[in-house]
Amino acid sequence: MTSGPDGFLWKDEPWGRSLRSATLAVLADHLFTTCQLRLRGVREAEEWAAVAQALGVDSRHVARLKQVHGREAVVLRRGAAIPSDTASRPHADIIATDDPSLAIAVQVADCVPLLMAGPGGRVVAAVHAGWRGTCAAAAVSGVEALEKEFGARPADLVVAVGPSIGPCCYAVGDEVLEQFEAAHENAARWFRRDQDGRLRLDLWTANVDQLEEAGVPRASIRLSRLCTACHPGLFHSYRRDGPGTGRIAAAIRARPGGW
Ligand SMILES: [Zn+2]
Image 1: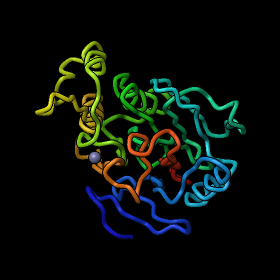
Image 2 (image 1 turned 180 degrees about the vertical axis):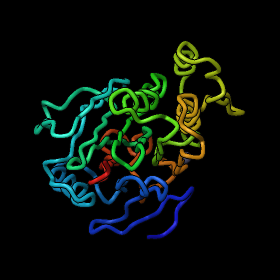
Image 3 (image 1 turned 60 degrees about the vertical axis):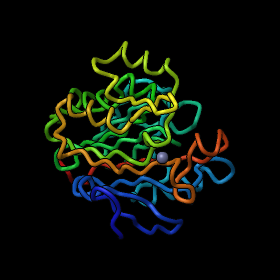
């Protein structure tokens, strides 16, 4: 392991490097993958099996979603069956479980991946939040799912915010600001305008602010501040590389024996 920003650690896996939050790792095993895995195309199944292996679960025990840029949460209680094929994956952007035999995962390529764990790592959640998801407060939906379904208090959660597009690289149109302003008080604090008039959105601060407002202590939120678009050779980026780009997996597993 080598050190990264804000207590994140790089680990060498059989296939390349992964990123973990040291703070979150105390509670639950998890990882963010790098560009050595594409997680698409002909090697997709094989590469997701490598993600499963990194978290010590069977390759059939990785629960994933058909992500739709919203705030719907899927809750998999211990022993629940998981969809085994792509077509039957639930349409949602948040997944939560108390089942330590599962790894739960979201996939991103610039959107913000958040991984969460409750006390003792006995409940975990993964959240996909691009601009639409952040506007819809998907991170808050993850916090609410853990509290409502499993009784984990927001004050006791630890959250890691993984690699995603930074305010350095995320120019957006005025219609994005308008949608945020319609949904959030003071949404303008998450935007700034360049000297050339272009609007930039800071998804990192928006997600951290929303988590704090939902009751997660700032000290329990770890923000990698790694911009996917700024780091070719390390991360996939939709903005930089276009729709053919690979995906970053953000996956987490509840602690076996965490009860
Ligand atoms: Zn950047």
